[in-house]
Amino acid sequence: MDPGATPDSAAARIPASVLFCCDHNAIRSPMAEGMMKKLYGRRAYVQSAGVHNDMEIDGFAIAVCDEIGVELSRHRTRSFEEMRDWGDDLGQFDLVIALTPASQRQALELTRHFHLDVEYWPIMDPTGLGESREAKLTIYRQVRDQIRDRMLARFGPPTEPDSDE
Image 1 (spheres, rainbow, N blue to C red):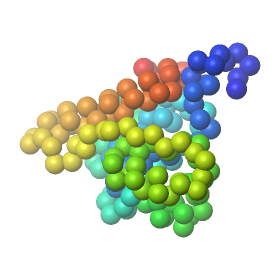
Image 2: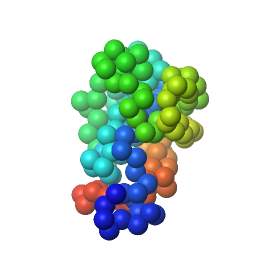
Image 3: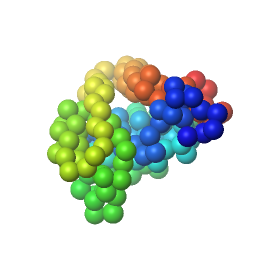
Image 4: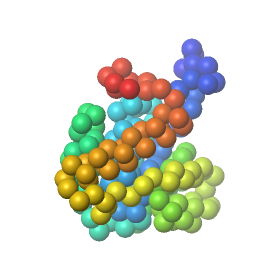
């Protein structure tokens, strides 16, 4: 902990490593990973994964995150299984944050032999909602803001000077 950090400070509430997970690693978990990195910098090792890897990163997710300075266009989706294949062990994470019921079940199953925390943040699925492009963007902004609000409540104010929260 930073010498000047109090137990309630953001630095004290941020785990050393966080994994965000959702169903496809194409919308919610990449948004969360990108925002966590922007708001809290290198205070935590942050990754994201999905139960499945059968989609590319969602264009609306890229667009609404770009509005707040979070770059997602280079994100490559990956599943829990691919994480293991690439050498990322779930046991290396201090905290797993599941953003969907299916990812919560998968995370609990995969981590039952590890001592780590799994939290569930029920975040709305924006896919298929909204008729027009603007309506879809509005819904994706709501999802982005819902994740950001949960993040700020859980980890405290941003620690990075360039995050404009």
